[in-house]
Amino acid sequence: MSAFSDPQIHSARRPDRGRPVAVEAAAARGTVLFGALFRDTPQERPETVVLAITGIHGNFYSNPFYVDFGAAVNAAGAHFVYAQTCDAFGEIPTRNARTGAAETAGSWNERFAWAEEDVAAWVDWAAARGYRRIVLAGHSLGANKMIRYLSSRQDPRVDRFLLLSPANVRHLAAQASAAERALVRRRLDEGRGGERLPFELFGWIPCVADTAGD
Image (tube, rainbow, N blue to C red):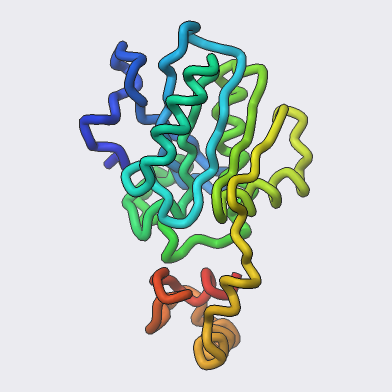
């Protein structure tokens, strides 16, 4: 099942370059990530692509900002990829490219430690398709993921980067009550990190203890 079944997203096999097409990238652990390629440019394959790494629940359907962003980048002569990581949705069915097994990904069980390989999956995707200039643009928590990736790997394939409203993680963490933090610590100490918490993290993110602990 694809994350993009809406008619506004075309199959990559369709010739209409005026509308985004669904694309996929597989992380090193095998999880398939979904994205949308905006390619309404005079050149069929320009040298530059902008990869927008999304924030929590910042999926294609919830944030029209990315549609405007993609159109603006196309107007400047570059391709644009709405590059979703696991937390773009609360929960979404996907698959593992290495094992072929079905998976359920989302903000409910994402680990921040996956940030590097998720960003790398999209950079690998762009490099494999011959883009000579790769620009990373991270929005909200996606910006934090991008910072971690670049500080760790210093990938020479990345030509430029943009930080769009990076998340203030300390401020977010302060929204959790003392009782909630204590419960997360207890679950982790008991080896129950994969169990769902009885409250929504920050008041709006249902998740497991491992995710909250990150």
